[in-house]
Length: 204
Image 1 (cartoon, one colour):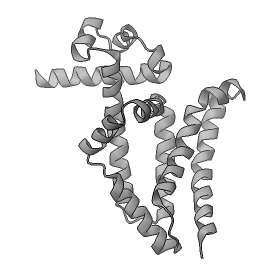
Image 2 (cartoon, helix red, strand yellow; image 1 turned 45 degrees about the vertical axis):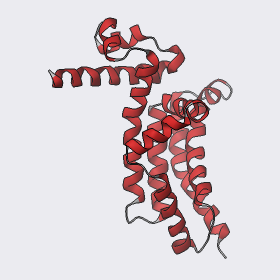
Image 3 (tube, one colour; image 1 turned 180 degrees about the vertical axis):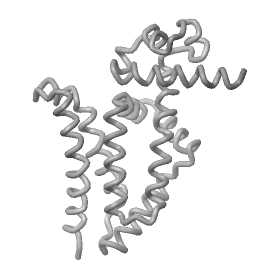
């Protein structure tokens, strides 16, 4: 019985992920998610009482993988440049395939910052240790001392904003889906190089 419930919940989460990716939070409908999952709407409400609760569950399910990836990369033996290269590639791929995630993050930042902090803690993600690792490697590998928070914010913003800006890129600049994918692939190479060059500019 427990396995059946877990499988049903996972089916709903996967279906909701697809609908939220296509329609965003505002455009998604519980009936559409139920249809995508092959379930009736009443069963959907039994597992998740509202679209808001389902959206949060989808986000947490997806983003737990991100925290795991960040921890693995920053506690590896890679150089800082290699860590940033791996993370940028992963971030851009993940965010472009899960376009609802940046919206959720921005919403949490302004409306529920405590819930994002709690989610990090329950997933054993310690931002302070990541910042300490960045500072340590900046000193050892580049002989520079700059605020590691600035470095991490550069990485996040350079990856997240182009995904948030996708509607603008498509409607204002006329980029189709193929051009968007090429644009994201280019950023996977440009962003790490841009950040590495910035580090070199700080060398004494």
